[in-house]
Image (tube, rainbow, N blue to C red; front, side, top):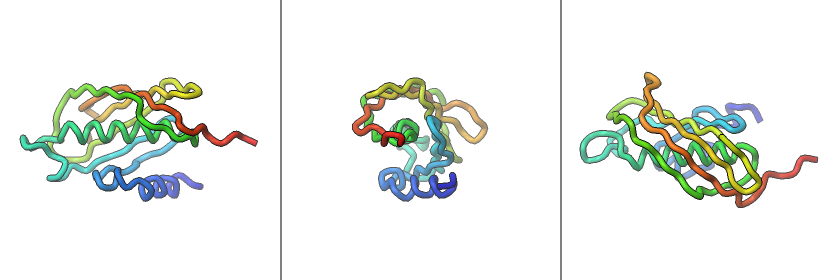
Length: 136
């Protein structure tokens, strides 16, 4: 499956991400980027991107990067540091694998704006509920 087809498949198969306006921007083994175009429904009462939107993006990017080996993972823990706020444009969350064990996967996520300024960063641990298929 080519990269464009894979990205379309990942976007079409995740109702939660689609509901929250998040889509896969790039997908490769151990590194996935998701993006969100900021709209009225992603803002908090102060008119800036809601902290929950940042966290949801980070969790989605980390989970997709963990699953890039073909296994199935769920979030075990996650923490996010909020650095800077924005109220418009497109933001990107990049999840990268730091360590992949037999049952857990540790990832780092950076969320940036259109000018590559870091808005938030954090670390997640994913638990493997089904390992990837064995190579023949």
